[in-house]
Image 1 (tube, rainbow, N blue to C red):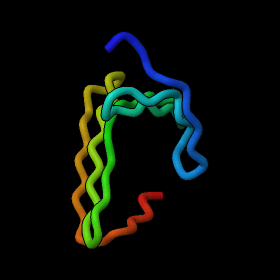
Image 2 (cartoon, rainbow, N blue to C red):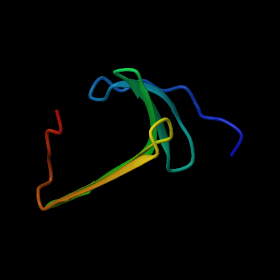
Image 3 (cartoon, rainbow, N blue to C red):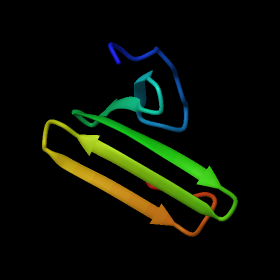
Image 4 (cartoon, helix red, strand yellow):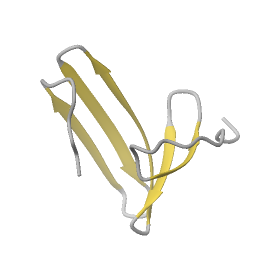
Amino acid sequence: MTGFLPVEDVHLPRTVGYGPGLRQLAGNGHTSFGHAGTVPGYTALAEHFPGTGVTVAVLANLSVVDIR
């Protein structure tokens, strides 16, 4: 992959771009790369923060999760 497509999502921190299955977010002085998905009854999120080397994965048995 050589770049991300510009995209806006009002439900996320500043969305910088979207590539094949990955999104790039920027907010609170951090940039992250990851993917989220939902199917009825479940939600999953994985984000990597290259500036800190931290990767977070969240799995929930809810269709809607407010992560704020």
